[in-house]
Image (cartoon, rainbow, N blue to C red; front, side, top):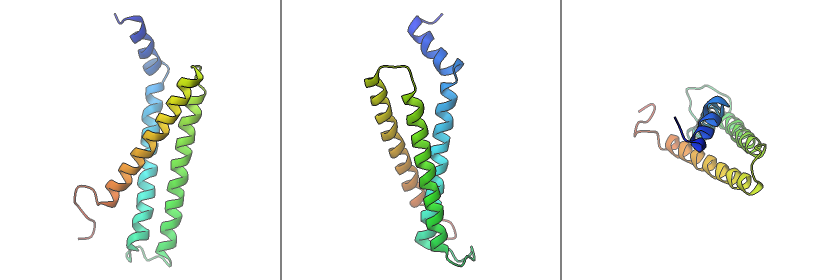
Length: 124
């Protein structure tokens, strides 16, 4: 049997669905970062195989959509954290930590995608 504090944390994570929300939010963050990175890649290279009238403009539109998705995901996470019935200082610390981690993960995915992943480049 688990001690009472660990039992409360396990109930919060598993029974109340917090763990599912964490994974959903992380997945959304990764997908929106990849959409942003894809748009930036089109802007950077301007692929001719897409046969678009203005591939740079399309890249900027895709990048803007990705950034909007990143911001919506960030606001969703902060909104959910702010609705917790915890002490105000703890909520502020959690929201700031969440925003910082989200920013760093987005930077990591964007830099990983911009460098071509594991040293592989498309079309070479």
